Length: 271
Image (cartoon, rainbow, N blue to C red):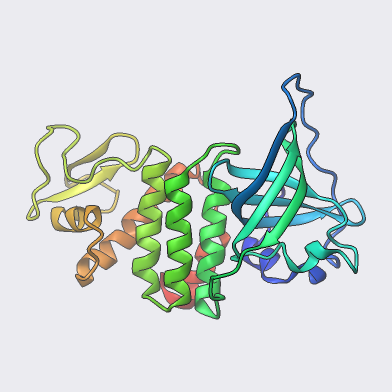
């Protein structure tokens, strides 16, 4: 998928997407001899969508038991399609699909409700969460705990809890759930406990170690690392240092792929 501003691509409701750039063909998946996969009543959220042929969409969804899944929503752009008002971001859905290829066919989508809408700055934060999941998660890799954390994070943003703290907690949970988060309470080189008074760096592939004068990675106090492990962001220094640390770690694990929504948030909110 070509690079585009993820937030702006998602900000419009489905009717507006019909006026987006020319429709594209879905990725051609290799033929499979596996049995057809049928799923019903699966909790999920729309992460991203783009046009497919004349009247349909490719919808990338994040589901509780199947992870990130790509679905063809046939006829979703037709004027009277029931899907037009359902396949919206940040709304809990009950989804069904079938197929055995990489891109499957949406067979049902119902709005579940029960979640307040995101508005203003919280809406941008929601697009940031979706872009992180879209770029960090492999397809068909289930992360039930991360799904639950995503739901909790959307609720916290909707209730105007402090965005920097909410986002740091989610970023940390994402890295842990994908197996690259590491343990912030133990020095990786010495196996000694992290000391609140010492200064460290976090190597993306190795973990925490004591800082040296030549380090270019963010220098982090042991207190910040211990606070992050306990999800305690009350201290102003912890908030500042954790922001730069997570930015550094995410950049590494994304392989240099830019996060378009993060830059918007940095510009608007200094997140």
